[in-house]
Length: 418
Image 1 (tube, helix red, strand yellow):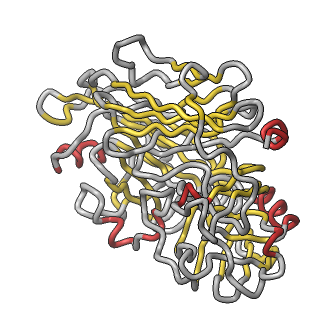
Image 2 (image 1 turned 120 degrees about the vertical axis):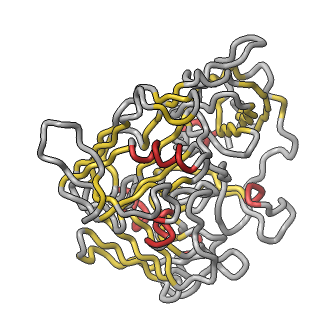
């Protein structure tokens, strides 16, 4: 195992503040070489950017650093409601840091998995509290600046929870999205008291420029709560990439800008482990993932247990559903579903798929025996809500908006659809 730990590329995580399940997970086939059953205590082998005995500033990133020969293999940080924090692990496994602000006035539990020079696993769990909000409502938009697929929703995280319907409407009126070329009618959806998602009625246009901004600065939201300044966000979209995964025909149809590029033999989840139906959005790509059955509740002694090195893994859920290389099931690809929930394909096809996709691209599963992908608690399942249901999540009475560019000198604002 030490050989793998030295040559692998460490996993990168982009964790949303939502009730997600995350970790070294997913599907496989046979048992590998299991590690020691009892992890060592990693206390003292990792350090944290936490003030000694005091509360943590939620606007500063949480940083975790490995010491000595140890490497970090997995980090989860959750608040009391079980919502996870986005984060990123360095390629060498030495450092992990959060990539989104923590919630104010919250208690967090951090679980760190490590690996020593011999590949033996370690564990440590710590807790900390963040300081209270400063009574100014600020907004953090996501995802990070960059180019994404046409299925990528826009997210807004509030520093102060907003529950009152009138206050929510005021917030929503001041969160503005514009797109060029113009997108279809769009709307915000309140996921919870602090989190909103925005999407058009249909996917974003290919090669669009998307601008997101808040005009809440100085606006009275409710009682003594006023809006504060927030950083705007600019995004672009790439080609319209859609991977249609048909569990019934055991084929993936890969389309770019409406044209079929490649048809790939696949295998998806077998009975009892059926792959989720519905639209998912690419969350990230990992050249190497160690997949262990225990992370999805399969004990080491089970006939379904596995511990496998997996390559060219494209993540579509936080709970561990990937499109990945599965050389052990090539004989079943194109004819049978034998995985534990992932979409498996040959190493050559998985490598090709890995190179073709980016975050925000669309992966849609049809004709599986699994349930439909949930909207918000396991990645971006936003597109699985029909447009009527999506508009019902708005505080503005279900009114459509148009993400358009206004050719004026004034700041662009969302306008009601004509």
